[in-house]
Amino acid sequence: MLRFPGSSTTLCDGLTRRDLLHVGGLGAFGLTLSSFLRLKAASPTSQRGLAKDSNFGRAKACILLFPYGSPPQHETFDPKPDAPPEIQGELKSIPTNVTGVRIGEGLPQIAKVMDRVTVVRSVTHPYPEHGVAYAVSGIPTYTPALETLPRDPRHWPFIGSIVDYLETKRTGNPVPEVPRNIGLPWLLNSRTDLNVSAGPYAAFLGQGFDPVWAEFDGEGKKIAPKYTDGQTKEFMDPFALCSLDSKFRLSTTGELPAEVSATRFEDRRSLLARFDAARLESDRIGSAGGFDKFREMAFSLVASNRMRQALDITRESLPVRTRYGPTLFGQSCLCARRLVEAGSKFVTVFWDGFGQFGNCGWDTHNNHYPRLKEYLLPGFDQAYPALLLDLEARGLLDETLVIWMSEHGRTPKIDSKPKGAGRHHWSRAYSVVMAGGGIARGKIVGSTDKIGGDVRDVPVSPKDILATALHLLGIDPHTMVPDQQGRPVPAVGEGKVRPEVFA
Image: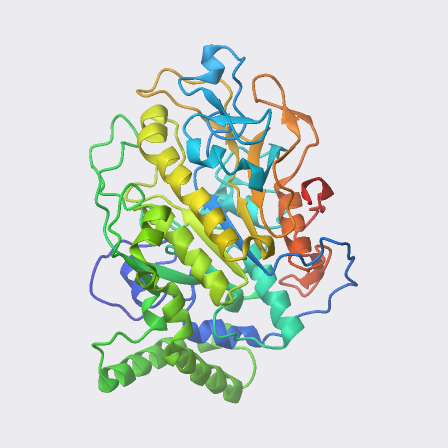
C-alpha cells in the first residue's frame, strides 16, 4: 500500500482518509480517473424493450438532492396543524401558492414555488435506519450492518451508476467529456469522524461506474448548532456558512493544479502507475493493451477544461451565488446546475455530515428545534427554490428531473427528553419532493393519517421513485443488468413507475 503524509484516520479497509483524498477516492471507496476509464471496459448485457409513453424520456438529466440523516415530514412537507402539540411541535404550518396545500413555517421561500413541484407524502418502507443504500438502489432487503460496508457484495448499484452504465451501452461512449455520474460536495461521510457509508457505489456493475466525486475547497465560517447536548467539540460547518469564494474541483487525481510543473505531473503519473500496478490483478478488465489505452484516456481527461470549468462556480456572478445562499448545500446546488448544463446526466448533492458522524446532518435525535430553525431549514429554504427558478429561467427545468429524498422520515411524536427535543427514525410514512423533467406541478400524491405516522392512501416505495426517475430519463426500469455472478437482475429491483406524479 502506498502511503502519503497527513492524517492517519483509518477507514474500514485500512486506507487512511488522507490516502482517500489524495488519490481521488482510491479503489476501495471512490474512483481514480484511470479506474473510471479502465473499468468501463466491461461489456453490459442487453436491455429489454422499452415501454414508452408521453413522459418516457422527458428528462435529459437528473439532480438528486439527498439530505443525509432524514428530514422530519412534520416540519417540512406534511405538517399536521390540527394535531396535538406533542405531534405538531413548535413549528407550525403556512399556506403555499397552491390552494389548500400547507408546508412547514420554516420554508417560506419554498412555499412560493410549490406550484412547480409534486410532493409524494406517502413514501413508506420497513427499514427505519440510515439506509442510504436501500433508498438509492434496488437492493431488496437491508440490514444496518450493510451501511458500514460500502463494498459488500450484497449491495446493488446506485441509481446514478445504473444511468451511467446503461448510457454507456446505448451511446457506445464510455468516457464522455463531462462524466455522467457525479457526486457533490465530497465522498459521502468522508468529512466526519467515522467510516464512509454505503450507497453511492456501482456495486456489481464495477467500480468504473462509481460516481466521479468532487472535492470542496473552502472552510466553514459558522459554528453549527450542537448535534447532541453532550457534544464537547464545536465545528465550523460549511453547511451552516461558507464564503462565496469557495470552489469545487475534481479529486486530486483528476486535475493538474496550475502550480504543478510538467516534471511533477510526470512524477504523479509514475506514482499512480505504481499504485495501479499493485492492484492490477484484482481489478484489471481486458488486455494489457486495453489497460494502457484507458490510462492514456485518463490523462487526456485531466487535460480537458470542460469538467474543470463546470465545477468552477466562481465563474458565476455574485448575485447568482448569493441567491443560492452562502452555504455548502446552496453552492453545491449551483454547481449541480452547472454540471447538468455542461452535459452531465446524473448529479447527486448530499447534505452530508461534517465533523461528527453521530446525529449528523438531518438526524435530529437531539437539539431538533435549534438545528431546524438555525441551520437546516434556512439553508434548504434558500437553495432549493433558487435551483428550481434558475433551471426554469435557463429553460432547463422541463428537461431536468430534481428529486429531494432521504432514507426515511421521523417519528410523529416528539421526544421532549433531549435538550431541544428530538424526533427519531420512522420509515412508515415520509415525503419525497419531485420537480421538472415531466413531473406534475402543484400536486400532492398520497396522504398520511392525522398524526403523519402511517400512509392512508397511495403507498409509494423508494424503489418506485427510482423506477420513475429511470422512466423519465428514457430508461426502462425493468432493464436487466448483470449481478456479480453474471445473472440478470432488474436495474432498480421491484420498483414500479408511478404515473401519479406525471404532468
